[in-house]
Length: 295
Image (cartoon, rainbow, N blue to C red; front, side, top):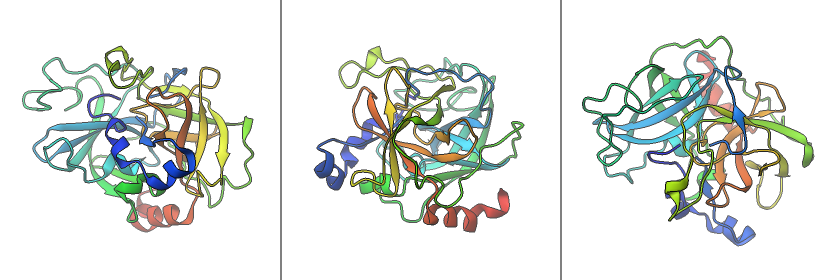
């Protein structure tokens, strides 16, 4: 969940409407906190790295295979952002591993160069890393990323982990009631502990797939609208953090995607975490129209 953490940059993208409603800043999320090792429970959840045309590493996110080639993630993970100065992302690598993904010792975050680097975040190493093309929800707006925060990577090679995530049906989340009984399964490769600016050296950012079971706090409110839900991020339930962006939040213990990890409300990844809903017509219609023949 480090490198370019999809989240530190996004305080600049805080949307005035949500700030006015909640007096809080909203930043793209980027690991599972207070969770546990996922092991082989969700082999279709991968770690994505975005790269410029010259190969430079830009940032990392999480995501879910819903077929052998369709990898669903957050829109702010695939957007044409150039904040690193290397140009917008030109392609992605998606890593699949049930264990710790060790960085290549020849890689330096200062240069972000992949010249001579064979392993993570630039290549295979001991994991399965597959290149892919980036796609973005047609209504995505970087100034209000959380309103259409959906992206896709289409893998250049088919990968079959043995099982896949599944898209929700239209309105699957409608009628859900907030409270500890309405649980989700959050999975991702993000930070395990975040301390925020000035103390980020204390962060715990091992690249390993973890799982937590947050519960529903808000749905269909003035803050969440119909595009997101708020889930718990605390020591009791676990939750998501920087680097988990784009990772799945499954309904209950199923493989059905309620949505993708989208934003957080504080630097320490505590309290609440925002999930972009995938059970809405614009998302399902776009996915079907663009990629329906692939899943």
